[in-house]
Length: 158
Image (cartoon, rainbow, N blue to C red; front, side):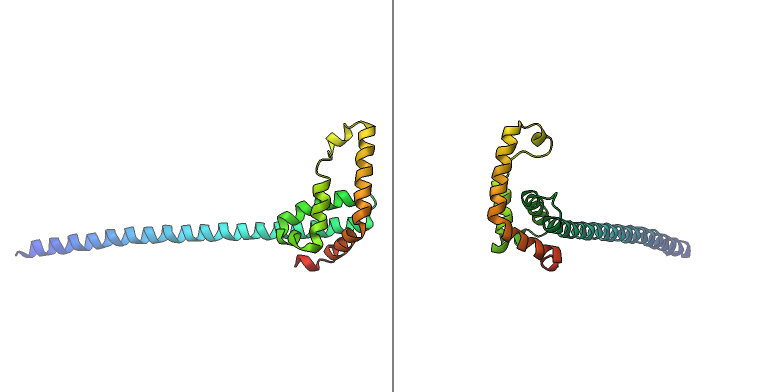
């Protein structure tokens, strides 16, 4: 074989090595960039989840405190709000026997209209619903207040 052919094959081999090295480097760079983007997305999702968790925790404490100390918050409204918050925060709490009263009050008042629908009701029907809620609240006042005290302390939310 001639020297020219040998040098040409060596040059072609070196060129192939350089090209393949560049392709490999580019692929590795893309893979690293994808991993960094994935890690950033996961970190953002975790941060959002933690923020939502903190928001729900604080909301539960505030509603529980309002049940105990704010006369504008009725026991019925508090139970409705707590049920929704606890379902989103930690649903297994509602399965505990002590918290069953929240679900019971919520379920027994779910047929009563709220917000604009409540405002549109005739006075007679509003009074009937209010009497129904007052009877339910009187029946469960002690249990709901005990749960509200426990939740406002934040212990079961940790």
